[in-house]
Amino acid sequence: MRLVILSDTHGLHGFIGSVPDGDVLIHAGDMSLRGTLEEVEGFLGWFGALPHQHKLLVAGNHDWIFERRPTVAKGVIPTGVTYLEDAGVSIAGINFWGSPWQPWFYDWAFNLHRGAEIAGKWALIPNDVQVLITHGPPHGILDEVVMPPGKHQGCEALRERLGSLPALRLHAFGHIHEAYGTASEGECRFVNASICNFQYAPVNAPVVVDL
Image 1 (cartoon, rainbow, N blue to C red):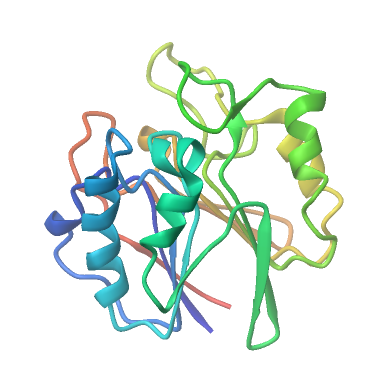
Image 2 (image 1 turned 120 degrees about the horizontal axis):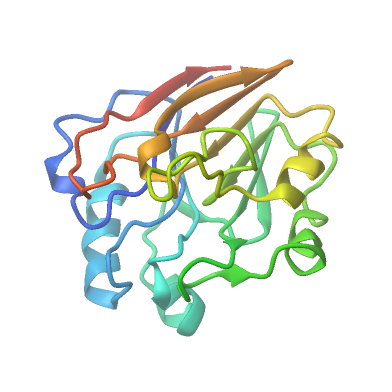
């Protein structure tokens, strides 16, 4: 199974030169900049028209409409796109789970306090998940910010939960633009697929992973 992963397009999806072919297309949140219906509809028109057989989507901290007006937001999702908000789907025997939350971050959408509050969301992740999609990263993995230098912005509770997911093979996320890239730990591969860099320029390529 070939996964094509992108995140943090912030309304600039039209500047992506090409999206590689694959079986499952994943967007890990921040499809918009201000979270308006118009922005989201524009993105979904582009995303839904891509030829991948399966398309999975989570919201990010910029995607306000999914938190404030979820019925409206979900109502414009086209056929063929599966929105995951603390929910899962099985594709060809592979179990996927998606969640939009991150530790409190500048009063944006889908914020929860570090500790027990956000850990409650991670407790919903099934133990048999094989591909996890979150908007924010786990603490210490592809989560280092430029300002302040050296600070890790990822979620400690999420990192702890990963240790209890024995079947996990891939964790895809974004949120921290400057930490774009891949990493491995044990049998799991981690992908920060932020298309935009720290200056919000869409310069990074989608990441392809073969399971």
